[in-house]
Image 1 (cartoon, one colour):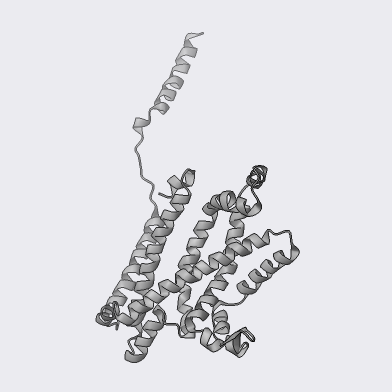
Image 2 (image 1 turned 90 degrees about the vertical axis):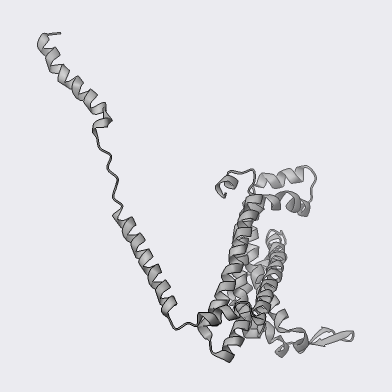
Length: 295
């Protein structure tokens, strides 16, 4: 190699070694202008709402006074009781209807499909009113000649609320359960049949435990929604939380104060249910990658 070629290549080597040295560069943080602007707007709106509530025409002493009032606590207890019973009824119906959807009989399958179509299509408020006024269609209930009861005596506000919410919930739960059953691989069904299990036994011992990971999150959300849907039962005069607060503010005209009482208790119940839901989901997700992600 000629001498002049060596001289021409040396600057190139120096340039490469110079480029590989990162210490000469200064680290400059990226300016997230949109992020800071969005955070400032959120803080400003939050502060404005807090100031508006603090200086609004709200008698907070009345809110604290009725927060633990006997009528309100009884309404809260009725809300929780109705939500648990209606959700239990909805789950029982939903699981049954979901299994019926897999039946080879077109009559059973069609009945399950018709049930889902009917009760998902009628608004919950309308269903409550229909159940409460069932005596206009069926004046009596029972077996003629053996025993009969007046429908108006049987269809109390609690029974109408339970049937209206529970049967309506069953239509939605059936689709959730059906989706969970479809998520299980067909090989699981074949393996169950190979070891001599009949269909219901395979569902109970093999399929449903695996489908629970898919079923539980939406069922938990439905239960939380059920707590709020109980407020609709005030139209049939069932004494739940919303009806209790309405009864009080119709007397003392402290509407907003009593609405805040109901808001506090609804948020408290839903917070507890959300924590329980996360723990149950972690229990059924143990042994999978999602168990670690949910912690």
